Image (cartoon, rainbow over all chains, first blue to last red; front, side, top):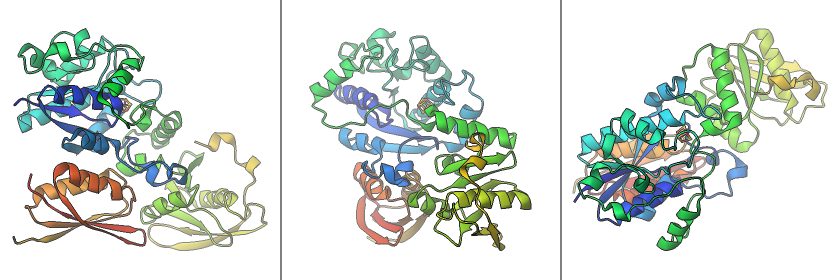
Length: 344
Length: 78
Ligand code: SF4
C-alpha cells in the first residue's frame, strides 16, 4: 500500500483533498505544523467573547473525521526565519504565505523521507489565494521545498502536470479534480457528495499574520526593539490585551477581561507588572525597559482602565520580577491624555 | 503489565502546545504507561482526548482543581 502524508490545516480544502486520496486506497496520515502564529487553539482559550465557539482544534477534528492519525509538529523556532526573512516577501499584512507554504512542504518532505512515506498532498487550489496559490507559484513550492513531483494537489491536479503518484499509477489522475479560482462552488459540491455535515469555515487565512491589527503589533515590537528576533512568549502576548506604547523603551499590556488577566498572571514572574490596589482594575504587564518616571506614567495609564478612572487618587502596586513591590499613589490620565498614536 | 506513572507540566501553555508536549512525551513511553498531564488551557479537555482517540491512546481521567486540569493518559499500542 502506498503512503501519503497530508498537510492538515483544519480547513475544508485539506479535508477534501485528503478524502479524495483515501478513497483511492492510499494510506494517509495527517501532519500539522504549529508555528506560534496559528489561529488554531489560542485566543479562544483566553477571551470571553470567543467562549461560545466550541473549543476544538480543527486539525485534530478533521483528522478524526477522516479517521487518520495526525502528527502535530512544533516548528516555532525554524519558522522564525520564514517570518523574519521571507524570500518572496509578505502578503497584504505580515503573512509570508509563499515562503510559508514552501517551508511546510519542505518539512513534510523531510518527514516522508524519515518515515518512508511516498508522497505529500495539500489542499491547494490554483487561483484561490492571490499570493501563494497561483499557477506560477505551484512549481515554486514544489521546487523550493525539495518535494518536486512527490507533491500532489488533488483538488487541482488536473490543471497541473502529472506528478509521480499519477505517473506511476499509485493514484488515478482521472479521479482527481480540476478546481481553480476563488469560487467555493466545486468544494461545496464535493461536501454534498461526501455528505459532510460540519467543517471549519475558511477565513482570511490560517494564521494571525494575515490580521491587520496583529501585524501592526508585530511591526511595532520589531521596531521598538531594533531587532526582528522573537520568542514564543513575545508573539503570544501580541494576541492578548490592549497594547499601549508611550515610548520606544516600553509598552503596557493591559488585560481587557478576566480571561486575559488569568493568562497574563502566568507572566508575572518574567515581567514588571502593575496592580490597582484602591479600585477594581486590570492586571498590566510592562514589556521593555522603563525608567522610574516611565513607571509613574504607566501607573497613570493603567489606572485609566480601572474603576478609579474618575478618582483623584488611585493606589497602584508595581512589582518587578525580583519581587520588589512598590506602592504609588497617582492621578489617572484622562482618555484625552492618552494620544491615539500610543495605541498599538 | 508493569505500568509506570509519569508527570508532564503543561501549565500556562496554550493549545496546541499541551497536545504537542503530550505527543512528544508519549512517544518516549511504553505501552501501558500512564502520563499525568497538568494544564491550564481549558481547550485541552477537547484536544487531548481527540488526540488520544486518533492515535489509539486512552484517557483514564480528567480532573479539575481550580484553574488546573489534570488529564491522565494511558499509552496504547501504535
Ligand atoms: S496564512 Fe499564515 S499559515 Fe497560512 S500560508 Fe499564509 S503565512 Fe502560512
